[in-house]
Length: 408
Image (cartoon, rainbow, N blue to C red):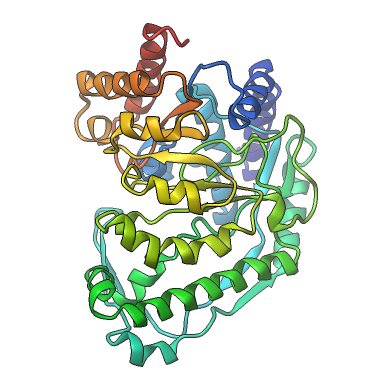
């Protein structure tokens, strides 16, 4: 088969999946879910993330052209989610492409050394004296290649646009949490120590990052590069479905005030709520103020700082419940006011396959979150030890346990 025939065949499969009746049913459920008006049934999601190379190895793609191979991989992932994982994810009848945007650096180079295991790395923080080295920093230069983007959009249209409509759609950043950017610049231990030893200097660094990120997101808005991220096919925050309405997303550029926002501060999980309230949240808040609704948290345990998050994050709607969170305590704090976004423990799936531990983890969530608007999410799956069946099996176990709990 030629590259064109391969892509057209896959585009047809994705289109047909998107037209299944269950997709419309899921879309409606997700809208009610995010409106905190669901029927009590938890939604189930699985994101292979780092394990995708084991689930769909690069050699499984058949296209010859490198660009077409990337498109092929994107389409194959949609088919796999729908037909193998069988989660509650919604497959939309579009082929999403992003603007070709180039983001520069802060004025300093961060040397990174990668390991050979698809994940680990070390880096040398370039700011060795915060107060002295702040002068080296500047806002990241930004540019967009509209011509290259539109050429690819036209090419996709010519290849399979009669089957699956290509569109420019997708986010240009993940988190507005700021702390990871600070840590890249000064180091993890150093940010902890600076809270005690150099508080004024750290406040200056966080203020710079706040202002820089405001400039960053507002540049995308001014350039007309933002797309609606509130649809049933949109990924939101650190895991979930963004759906806020039952129809198609808005066509064309949108404003920040029409979008979901997201922040977290995983790296500072060990600091006190008072330190979090002094050095982190006040700098995130002006960014999150820009958005219609917000999602907060990722892998950090939020129960110790949730009071600060609930009071400080504007229009909070979704809250991450990390694998090692105290679920019952956090459920009491969430109290049905926000979506309880449970990140199930990936270890018993990724390292060996411990079905007993998987069921125990799910049962704990189903017990703690009963009565909440909640979802079960498997993510941070950096390997499945070359046994892709584990992910679909986790989904099946999750559905078994939901039925066992009388929530199916």
